[in-house]
Length: 377
Image (tube, rainbow, N blue to C red; front, side, top):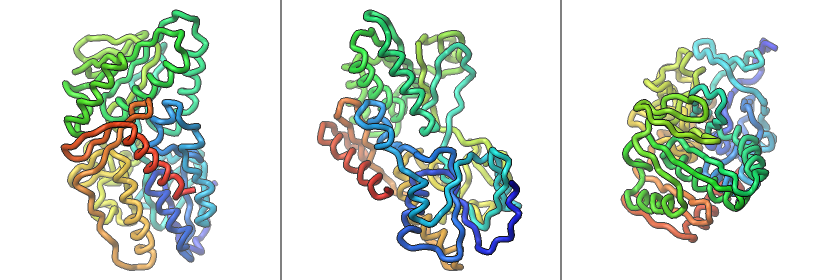
């Protein structure tokens, strides 16, 4: 139904169940915002922590163990949770349209929707994008069931397209899980990256350690493979090379959602929402955007740590705009810690030019991730 009510209270819309919005809701639960109606809109009630997702793929956690329960968090904060997807935003009219056709007005809105992936058409090929994260549960469970039921001596090939941190960590996790689950099957794993190097952006020594892990685990790495299209049971590169597989996971560079790009919001060339140092849209000051869906003057890596660090600044600034008070600037860190699990209760760390690995790094990573989840439950 069209939202035609006259606002007795001003309204804050939180679009997307991301790390920053979890922090905002936690802040509001601790210190309410009187006179403000708060609505969180998300297409999924339980959103997995991106940091813990690979450990779930590897079989170390159940799905519920890695998810933030946003309906429960909303109840604590006195906010309304809407299980809906957004299809459009009209920032000039301060309205969003939901997939159901309903229209919501807002006074201020915050976008924490992350990126997405749009793989090529794949008729006849089992292709699973790694984003959005909340859609991975059933496809991964179905694949495990399929592999588990294969006869002894059967062959099964898994291809990961995308050799960044997400692709590398995920294929190591999948290789560990499926090897334990179906030792009777001859499994083949391939990691295909578009460049000559994998894991760009982390310390070279850390990347080297992970490449060594891939080799030790029998995961074949294909370089300079710029995936173009799918044909039959293969993914084709722009140079004509083809990689065949029984299942393909798509983990290429993050892409912007279409509906913000289709609006009057100012976006960058890739379609991500341009924001200033207070996390506000450059074109529409009653719109905030954080995390991977936002575009900073100096581009930031698409890493969850930035959304987490933006959370407290966003929470303060959303209070401030309703109270007419000064906003705080967000100052992104110059270096950040990257922890990449190898599936087998080991992990590799990257900090600046330093890299190290071990079971203790894995335990360290689990403590960090579990602490974040516990704080929002």
